[in-house]
Length: 442
Image (cartoon, rainbow, N blue to C red; front, side):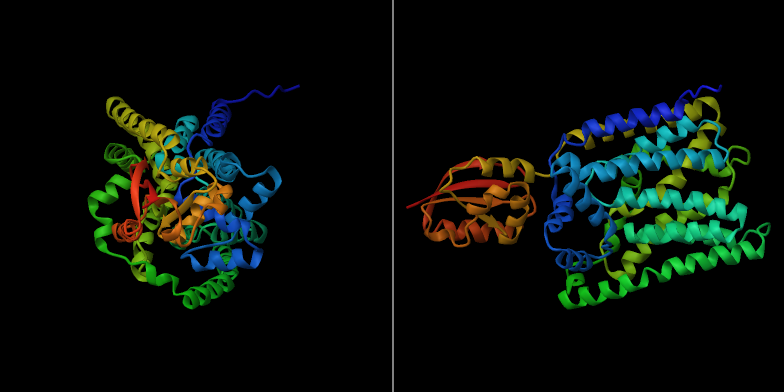
């Protein structure tokens, strides 16, 4: 009887899962995570409406997080657990893609994917990008399967993955477009196979249209898009190079060098043109969409080009001369590991530290936040602060003024100026990107 033994890929993914679960709760939730999680305590209609006010907001990540928290209770670990599980599952699908694309050293390729800082960051954040990346990987695997089999059933599975991807993160449509463009140009694929795959894609996209229409209507009603703008200064060449890998210039340069070698190699990688189409779509697509929608560019939008780049880089390290390949690999691994350590251990902002200080204040303390709307974030982290948040602090004898890490200079000056007309400052309780100031009435 054959005895199953774990191979290198299985051991690697298992070790990654253990590491990921160990570091999930090390840092407090930060602004973007709080904004994702806080509406989950609202009613279902209120939650859906809030999701639709956000550009590109889709329901599946919120529904998934709400289910985990309802089942396991609220904690930093539970809030981030769905993203971590999606990252682990994504590693499994990535390893399957390595086998299908002819990459010999699958364990090394999978390790490069897992250590990539842009991937690792969203494995650690209570947001939907890791789920979207899993959908993009699964869609690519199902696309290759449908392309080889040409059956209606395989195309239907591909179309279903497109729908799930769109409802997880709309930017997953960018690698899908690259895959379709590659398919259309393939002369060895039967016309019937092309038709069933294109038809399944069309059905999947049409299933997303009702959500888009409802979202546009909600955004128009609340004028939510008026808060954003696009500028080409947001995406200078140096910014792009620094942010592409999530690990800085050295990490990106090493990744692109190895990926370029993989692209030109004829023997180390199958379907090079497919991966090139996916990478170009994942890199240029977000910038074009931001410019058209007048929405700001963020590095997280490049995440869906990462699998294609890493697959090419893994093939490139095999095809390069020994010293060049080793140098590129060591440079990438060193820069990525350093960045991953910082991502896992350093807080991204001061909300968590500030909330801890506020929770320790005496019960009769009046807490005033600049601007007042950001009190919601502290209440999410520490619900017991609800009795301390004050709307009109001028008449209170003991006031603590909280300037969040995201308060503008004008918002800070407005609050402190109002308080200093009737109070005098007695202490600085917290400083840094945000401040907590203590006031006593004169």
